[in-house]
Length: 167
Length: 188
Image (cartoon, rainbow over all chains, first blue to last red; front, side):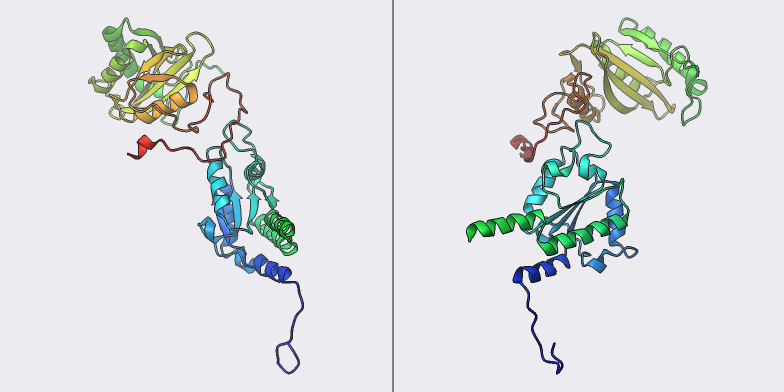
């Protein structure tokens, strides 16, 4: 803004401007399958208050959200469901693997459990812990915001590569 | 620790509570089904919480019906059907856990089956046996003769093998990324 109150101008790249908007308005889809889901709920509630980071609008429809938070153990029978939910989300979409089970299968190294969701879908941030504290989720969210701002998430990189090929 | 000591359970000492009743019931079962009862394992001689009765698979349905309806037994509640893989011949033991609401006591029946043999279904006595038997089939591959709908219940329908068999590898993953095909007959 100018000194006289008139609108000035700000120079930036359009992509950066869009990413700035994106990172401050993440719409999470909670895929909470076990105890990690409880910690995720705590992070969304007033004590930890994820709305400070612009990510309080939780949508249970994959078509309305852009951040998939996988919080909990994913059984092999649940794996196709997770894949379908991920495929239904619109680009750009971000994935957070919350907790040991989602990241690596955790203590469940048996025939029925998916050994980390990254065998199935690309993951942008991992949160260790069993379960991680809400601070972990908030830290991961801030890390994800950095990645989104730089355009370094899997989905954005894929999109950029596609655009480059097109040009 | 002496394993032959009576096992304390949540409901107190079952042996002192139900010991006499169990003895009475076992003599009655022996009178009615003497030739079909293969073996009886009774606390405190055998380290178990409730008596285990091994029954021939041909007469398991008669024994279950008898235990359900006979006065003095009234085991009206089928708590669970499960199985074990013993890795000997006969390979499997199908386990029936019964509970009597009237006497508040439990009893366990077992049937020994070899691989490929079929056990008669208990769905004619308890409708709830349907899903329990499906689970046994899913996990162990034991088939139930006369079962109305013997499909897998927990694992994916495309799964190969039966995961709770001892020879199934613990980490024998089978990942399916596309969703399970729906059987069109189920939609009718």
